[in-house]
Amino acid sequence: MVSILNNQLRASVHTLGCRLNQSETFLLRDQLVARGYHIVPFGEPSDLAIINTCTVTRSADAKCRAAIRGYIRKNPQAFVAVVGCYSQIGYKAISEVPGVDLIMGNREKFQVLDYASLGKNNRPVIIRDRLTKEDFSIDFVGDTPFNKRANLKIQDGCSFICSFCIIPKARGPARSRDLENLLDEARQLVDRGVRELVLTGVNIGTYQSCDGDLLTVLDLLNEIPGLDRIRISSIEPTTIPAELFPRMNDPEHALLPFMHIPLQSGSNAVLKSMRRKYELAEYLEFLYTANEAVEDLCIGTDIMVGYPTEGEAEFKETCRTFLENPFSYCHVFTFSERETTPAARLKGNDMPVKQLRSAKLRRLSEAKRYAHYESYVGKQMTVLFEDPKDGRWPGYTDNYIRVVAKSDKNLQNQLAHVRMDRVVGDVVEGTVCTILADQKTANRSLMSLG
Ligand code: SF4
Image (tube, rainbow, N blue to C red; front, side, top):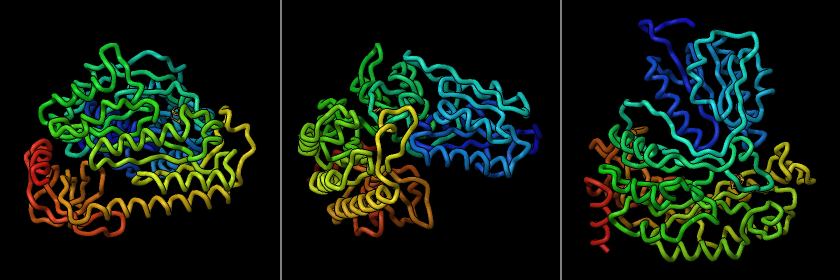
């Protein structure tokens, strides 16, 4: 490999796909820094690239191949390692992309740097083992300062059998991260400046290590001094303990009033064919219980459009379910046949039908998100601000409303009470009222405002 910057090798990392992949790429990036690499943005000239891939849909596969090809075109001399879910499932297709040197599945990907000194290969080295069901720890090494929300991986894999889903094959069965190991990483992230942690995994509600369950994780994270916010990312409907609700309401607990609960379809017939673990009535009953139990709760969902057994009537049921119930927004996924899944054998909807339905549901989601944002105009909310962009400070409220504010003060990584002024596009413009020491102080003072 060529050394360029003061004899320092340059590396870039790239993530495709979900929040879990993002958290893993972050750990890979930390490994690179610890080994002395200078990190450059993906696409710029570098000596090494690690591309962490996704295989959730066919279009995800195509995006991965395009990203790999695009990088190699600009960096033909670089060592190219492709890791992650698409490597686990689609290693043959990746090995046909000229210029790839190393393909590593999900089990091995954190050893990628042990192989990065191999030098360019004529044919890629493929390292890909069966995925086991053992619980796990992660070595982490980072010490670079960090001032954003950070993802914390607590779980991996899934033992559910949804008919459309390739993820259990790409990620293996459900397993949980060692409790002390994840707490150590959380403490280190907080020491590096992180104030909000987003818990990630494939099916985090099934977290169960020998030391405790998801509630144990939340309560022990809550004891870390300096950690202001804990956000749960996507969580499967049948796995959510009702004991979360009092924690979300407790001003002394860092757990935020936010849940993203995949619905997938509003039709019982389709849910059954998808092999989801609930009927619509059960899901809705839980939704209303949560919505009533937690003040200002934001509930988002995933909906899959164009599943083979979804006709026009079932699609309408889904739209009605989404519109008439307390969802704040939805992420729309267009059904894509994944080889070896049961749903791939069903005769399906044509692509134009799927695209039309997806576009319609996305419009409904935009309208609901807008109405959700509008309902907060005039109120004061607590916002954690990020890096400035275009002369304004962006951030999120505890219940996941995207806010921007103008201020001469440095708001980076600061918590503040913000008056919500107006909805403009997909953000709420606000005015900063008070900068706050921490989220618990913010909660208490908002409660006193009533
Ligand atoms: S719960 Fe279903 S959709 Fe989610 S990862 Fe597991 S199998 Fe896939």
